[in-house]
Amino acid sequence: MKKWEHRHSGPELMDGTALPDDDLFLNYKELHFINRWLGGYRITLKGLKVFVEKDKVLSVLDAGCGGGDMLKVVAMWGRKNKVKLQLTGIDLSAAAIRYAQQNCRDYPEISLLQGDIFTHLEQGNSYDVIMQTLLTHHFTDQQVAQLLRLMHDTVRIGFLINDLQRHVFAYYSIQWLTQLFSSSYLVKHDAPLSVLRGFQREEWYELLSEALVANASVSWEWAFRYLVVFKR
Image 1 (cartoon, helix red, strand yellow):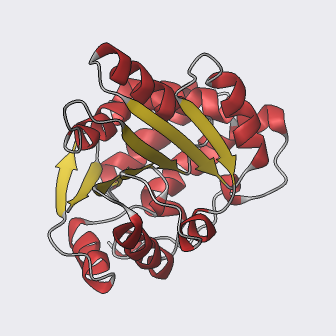
Image 2 (cartoon, rainbow, N blue to C red):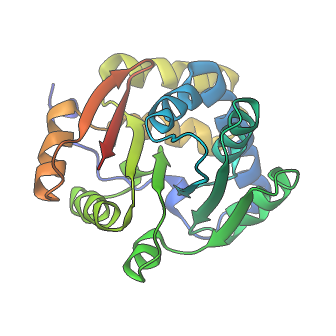
């Protein structure tokens, strides 16, 4: 089907810059539930474990941190497993950072920045690991390749990406679930569109090749996700 041959160009409502805080915050709460229920957090943690070194404080940047839920999950995992973490979240949305500041207030190992991830990395900021959860599908292929290259050139250990597979079953499943259970017009509109903006495995390898990133792995994960891991 032609609908699935190429990535949808978007945009999603979430890509706008004038969303009311209450609408955005409800969106974050529902996305937290979806990620927890469908195992999305588990995928990022699986990738992060690849980079853990005994007795080392690991500096991690969460690119496109949104409301900070992934950062909280990682912080709790670090505490439970005695992994020393220095976590930073960055997001273009000032409202997202305001939400994350409250959401992560009990986790001093988390710091937050409002800004553009491309500019941030181009300025020479470096981390042991950069992680992304459901960020890259918001970008064009050209932007994804650019970001892959920036991460490759700035990370000290590696990076991971957890993002959606473009798949007919995933599309209709999330469309049905959000129409039935969601109270957020943002989630109802954007969740199915996000799937259409997702990736196929061969597209990831093409983007990695374009960015000159060698030796990265791309694994399929439930539910309809790909985990991309690059380690030096």
